[in-house]
Length: 95
Image (cartoon, rainbow, N blue to C red; front, side):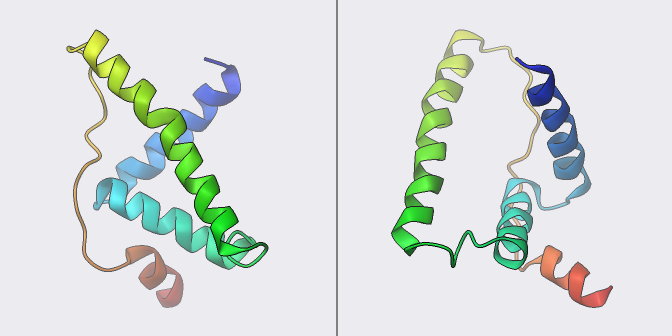
């Protein structure tokens, strides 16, 4: 793992740990950011951004399953909580 990946992991784990809603809230914040601050949703045909998203998912989904099978005692961060609503949008609107 590169030093940049380790640095980014630290930032993302800190962010995820600060969100009560776990992965769903992390995704909500990420997509809120992409919609507000980038042209991810508007810069190209919607099928392009959707393909980019699914390609990234497919790239890591298989390898993550392999790691779990090879290392059943691996301690992963529990980020599977569910949420309702969007706290990211509420935080931004409220201040």
